Image (tube, rainbow, N blue to C red; front, side, top):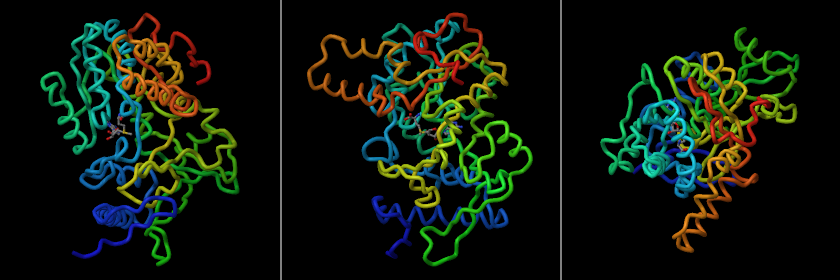
Length: 393
Ligand SMILES: C[S@@+](CC[C@H](N)C(=O)[O-])C[C@H]1O[C@@H](n2cnc3c(N)ncnc32)[C@H](O)[C@@H]1O
């Protein structure tokens, strides 16, 4: 067999194995073709979309492990079923208030959240009708395997519903939507960053960054978000904003719980955050080199929660709550779940470790936030009873 071509990894990152290198080479060839087809330059948003979601090739569309220890990163539902059990209390309140038993989860990953939420809702007296909308055919197949004992209760949708009442859940989905990358040049004018081919033999990947003047609508959107700061680079996410705005079209009664890492706008575009929030994950190493390991690594940008709240308002929805993951889970009674009698000591120790990961400021507790948007709900949501930070958005 021929040795697969090199896929360069900077020092400190693990080397991909031969199968991964062969896959990486196919993804590079696809991306190079897209750049040529686009006339030599692809805006980063389109690069990220192809690198993550091109059918059969993109990071989320092909068969790598991705989640948990053997993968590239660990999410809250992968950390412990306690996350889903606490979230279930908020979901149950939304379902009761909206007179529906329907849950719609976006981007369900390995199916870990559904596997925890469905039985937890049953314990709360709700037999959920659970729908999943997942972009990746590979992950959809994995979710079917993981949730095979719930056949009949879980359905996979091919498209957005025309109308929906109930509770929408999206954990770490907004950050995985392709972002626009921009910078302010030395003259204080906005530029879009994109990707071109790099033919130099010494190049770390056959791609290089290239900037073009931002088109007028993007320039206007950027100017409304932050002052021009020469040399400053960051992201915005019109696709994620459009997705939230569109919720207003089909969410008739209920709420969407959007859980992700990010900040309100003033923090997002803080003058000291000079290089933005673009981040890649490969085998539990986080770094900012988005043009290497294409198809083999996750690429994400943090969420501007002010933009998401504005998009919800534009879509005719109410902003129902915004707080840190730690505060939300505490409000939803996470610590009562730990104290449940009958736990064996080893399970208790595992739960305490998970609790630390989910709640600690140094881990997921503060960086991750929960934003609830919705329509037709009168009572305040219990997850935001204390520490609601809507005033910071
Ligand atoms: C970082 S993973 C999170 C997986 C899972 N929610 C978790 O927390 O473990 C992102 C997920 O969102 C999916 N995704 C991204 N954009 C999506 C969209 N517009 N609609 C549905 N799923 C999407 C990806 O395929 C993937 O399953």
